[in-house]
Image (cartoon, rainbow, N blue to C red; front, side):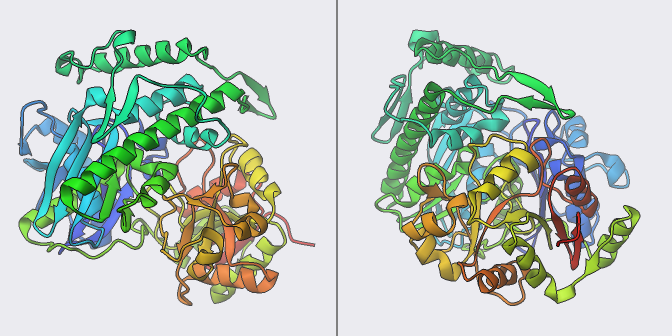
Length: 571
């Protein structure tokens, strides 16, 4: 089964499932090198990669599924639009083979399947929240061994995702792709300064009423959805609402310096306060939705997906919610993850996957490159390198202990927007200067944005206050006093951190790196970890991507496969 994600001209992706198991998944942006693969819904290169991983061709795939209904608002189970199918899967990459039809999986059902089917749970409440998809912006569902049952849905005119992204855009943080920045800025603000009373949390969820700004909640607007007329009206209404609070739209000044455009990365107190107010309100609404989902299902487990599911702070609030014993958040919670959901949902329907399925414990589902390929790339670029073989983690740990920053490129690429030790930039988390160096000079991004810690599971109780595994860096935790003292560069200004925990495993170079770092420094097995890319590009995919980003940045070293490249020899 081949699932395709990202139907709305962003975040295109592909996932291949064979015998109920995810064989491969990748996002198109990693190949096109265009962040979010904006303005295209072609999944062709990601799909070609997935097929090559399995050694099959497109005509050997039993079923192809897409994560949206092109005929919306009319219901549809299949799509036979040859032009659309060719847009998704360029025939020139598949021997000019053209599938005659694809299966349609409703967008929020695809999100829900991406969260529940790989959770390993035999039953759970499922919460999906995003901007919108197929006219829906939030879904409450119940997952059981029989599959998924939708319980409640909220229309696009009640979108929490759009509310959140308009705050980010109003504050000059960027377009919808930059909503995650708002979460970081919120930590600096007062969440009680602004009363955003057009959005009211209430039992069972929330209610959005923008009547004061020209949009009535009962107004029929379905005919304004697909041509984006409603979206444009909504953005104008929110602009009026935020301006009415005394915060005009903010546009960052930009200057030219040292060969590049440098944006203003500061913020005013009112900007942080609006960010904090929006974050707090979002968390209140999500809490009410989760409570209702738990009540309706009688479950004590919660699965989360949808673009809003990438909000680590909100996920931390849900994890701590009374009645939630276990939480699973799909690491590729945004539209790219719909490829996983569609492929798994079709596998369930065909009887190839019996629920509960195998729990998803790794996001390492993308391309890997053998040492010979990596060596050839380094040689082509004329780089000096050393092959440290199995000693690489120990050698790299020594460089990190000396305060150096390292690009870490190992194994299969991660799914989702968070680096999880396959395509990472690593540094010592004991020194806040490392965080500032990465933000300011390596990634050229706002200095107030937090970086995350990676730590061995055995250190979790001391640093994050729980022994519950956090493999995907997608759930925020309150830091312990030990974390404040020992890994302050990974603790945000509000006292939270978004950890990735790694099991002790001698076969895993990432785990051995952490263990060796602790042995060499006498400090916890924890490091600062951020994605291997600069601000304007997707996470690196290939060795060539890694070398290019390494060369264009002040990274000190590149650990790629068994090889180590140094910018300059240490003293």
